[in-house]
Image (cartoon, helix red, strand yellow):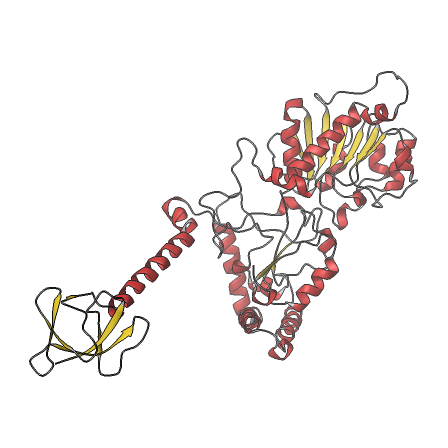
Length: 493
């Protein structure tokens, strides 16, 4: 963990403070990546931009929320809400989940987890999502514009989709009229998906079997609201996912590979890289400038000028060196992109090259995020893992690289210390007696020395003796002639 001025990424933990995040980013515009606290990003839509990478908590709470949806579904089908309020013995009512027709709105992590949980019940499952792509364990997948087809004949309708403009109020009077008198509506997504007044009318007239709601609109649901007192309504106070449930959610289910696995691409800190909404290192020239590929030259010029003004050095008064360096790098990228797309010939060549790359790209599970407006455009189902896999020996080396660096550094320190010590403190030689300063010695073959008169032939003159941490006078060299822990400063005779 480092100070915001030295960081390149931030983990935002204030779940209900998008204004605070906006102010934080305004104060630290150099941040390249922001991690949001929840899977749903709708509270932060006003803050999201194209200048940095964004990630959310997709998948962290998918299993607990799916489990809660199953609990609400069973409680509604078995009339547990009504039985729990009863004060006298009542007759038996309810219906089976076994073999039921279940429609799930949303095709992300919550839906996938719920589909697995419904497997033992043998349900016939229809999923409504943005794209009609096959899903394991699902009998039918419908595109968003066909979602009404999922309602007719459904025994249960489960809402587990993202809240965007196209999904606000997606369940209203027309949709409730298509449901059967026995159908239960389960909402574990967002309260605004359902038009509350229409739901109250449908429940009062018994047009549907009931509603099991973990979320409401408004939320919190005010005291005295009609939904609180209806016998065919079950309400939980947005508790399908709590912090205490997150650790359990991170454990992979049987047969699933753990998210943090050997060989996955690593970040600078040696940890597996996050799942991002988009990969900045492969941003196109249009993404750098924040415009559509179909944008006109005038639109691109306006976007370029806005970015250039924001990143101008005069706007960075008081910024750190790291912030200035990042702004300069971003400015170079923007200038490079502007030079390409402002010239019609270069832009045409660039667009043709991009189309050729898409045509030659192999099919696979990873795909770029379609950020165009549409049903579920920012839903958690659209988050993809953009970090490439690194397999085999290369993956092991990359994964353990930080430890290798640490070991090499320790070895270098050890060798360097030993070398310095060897130069500073030569090997001790045995002497007849400890020679004093001003005396002379002969160095015999082998490790021994002998004190001799200085007016006769001698090998070394001991100028002075110093502690091991002290320096010898200029013109002398260091020797260690005795084993008393001191050094001899000598010169040749």
